[in-house]
Image 1 (cartoon, rainbow, N blue to C red):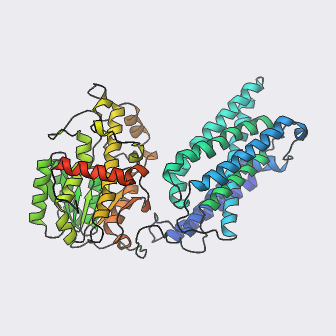
Image 2 (tube, one colour):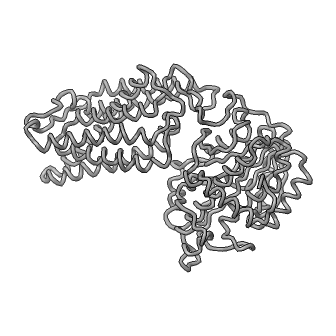
Amino acid sequence: MTLMIKDANWPAAIAFAALGIVFVLWLKTYLRGKQVWRYDTKAAWLRAFAAFSFAWAIAMASGTVPTILGNAWILPGQTSDIYWVIYTIVLTVVVFVGYWIIWPIGTLPHGRKIVFPDTFIFGLLWGISEGLFFGSVWLLARRLWNNLLSTHPLISDYATCFTVILVLSAFIGMWHALYWDIHISPNHNIIEWNIRKVLLAHNPNLILGAIYITMWENLGIWVALQAFALLGSTLAMPFPTWRYPHPADPTGPDMGEPTDVPTDMSGQTVIVTGGANGMGAMASAMLADLGANVVILDKDEPNARANAQAIEKSTGKAADVIVADLSVQSQVRQAANDILAKYPKIDVLINNAGIFTELYSEVDNGVERTLANNHLGGFMLTQLLMTRLQESKARVVFVSSDAHRQAMKVNWDDINGKALWKGKDRNPNAGFAQYNLSKLFVASAAIELAERTKGTGVTINTIAPGALIPTGIYDDATGPLPLIIKYFRPLLRQPEKAMITYIYLATSPEVANASGWYWKDGRFLDASELASSQEVRDQVWEWSMSQTGLSVGANS
């Protein structure tokens, strides 16, 4: 009943690795001159087939494919083992329920339809390839622990099982977050279902599967179950064919024709709050490079002027600087007056300014500083400029964050979150909770503002730059976060990646009419259910209008 582990097939491993390189080179050639971030069905297939080829190369090098081919899928004596029979049935049912029932419930097709045979071919190849990778991890772990613990087979089994679960959990999380879900898989997740998919599909499949393969060594059956699982998720999306462009989403925003030509922003006035440092500084520079007349609004006067000088050196045209602290409402009003006096037309307003702090403090009107700076400042500035923005047919972009999804409720009895600090001057958990809340308010108010300004010509959109971008916003943080940013910087999401969405929403004719949407990586998504709910939108709107002392706003 023991699996006979076979040696590597190196010629086949080298051949598949070479095939993967061919797909990578083909992809680079195909994308030459294109916007690489844009979802493209042919590029998605090329990327996927490169990944499949490398997975097969690993499977050949690890001996996984030779082992599957050199053994019966059902080992001698297993059909009479009632425990094996029951466990096999249970695992199959778990995979079926997780990927053929739960997965489709948490998935939206966004106008895509199953294309025969393309969708089926992709699903099977994806499932077999990822299954072979899973099998390779198990086989390598089995070899490692059998060699190290040859006299302790039970401990070796435990070690093998835990290694497989830990390695594959880390791989799946990082691979999908950093590459697959961005470049290959089209937008399909209902965000609120992500955790349920993990808990009800991914985790049971991985944990029970690791136990199954370690106890009974049915490598072929395990790989086949992964193919069955991912075929289900492929059909649920459904994954688009490479033969046609990605279909337009009938439930999505009003989009123009795609273009890969950068927009000439010459003569257009772009205001960027928080433009002295980090993401705002980068956005200011890139928009200036496209010809825009950039106005940097920031409380950090030295860095704001340094950035303006750098822009002048690069473009020959200096950016203007307005010094204001957006957490101080008198300064917001003065900044708005200065803008109205100097700029008869505003083409783009990017409400980017944001802070993170673990220290509790309140601004002059009694609002906690993070909430005042990240939400109220941009909200108030936009309201004070609204008439000019509507006359200009401007684009208004609010910078929220996927962190807003971590805000599960709004405690209106303690909107400052003071109780979270538990009487301490510094509390990391409280700082993050208040940051999440501030970004929830940004997203919710932006959705409501878009609804209230519908038909006026101004567009309102929200973007999520991405998590843990090493720009300096977390300089005030304590604990492991600064160490992660310092030592794992190359692995973190880079600012250039986030700039895709900044520049896209600020300049592209594709989104000239899109309003009320939440964007990330150049793609529209749904904000959290809480941020989108009409009840919360109304509450956030009324609270924001009250706190800023505005009696007249956008259709208030």
